[in-house]
Length: 150
Image 1 (spheres, rainbow, N blue to C red):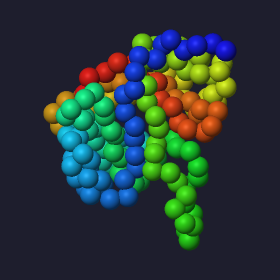
Image 2 (image 1 turned 60 degrees about the vertical axis):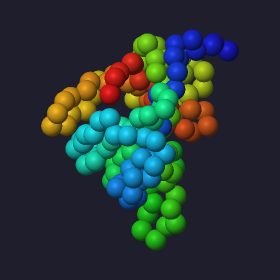
Image 3 (image 1 turned 180 degrees about the vertical axis):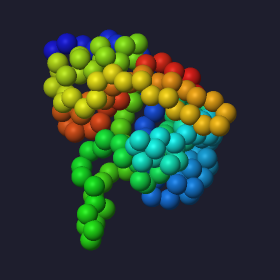
């Protein structure tokens, strides 16, 4: 088995919030504060925030419930019980998103999205991120994110 020494640490986890404002407020009570907000119309994402814990280096990304991001499971059909998980992905900081993607595929992951660069814009600033995504052998969506500061 190839050991992935490219992973530098945990960055964030992302959730799809059924009630965006209430979810942001809840995480605020857990010592998280908004450090960036954006929308990505190409992913049907109207509202998204990155929140950082004030006490330690940990982030949570909260997306509105209409976000069209890759996730495990299938979307709920009319009349279905809730079946789509709230957790969107697990993210690891890496030096090279493409290398991490290739190593993950070599170790049993399934391809989802090779390295891409996205601009997360709001009225105050734009942040450019480079990442890749795979499904773990267990089905979780794993994001490999090249270092970025929110």
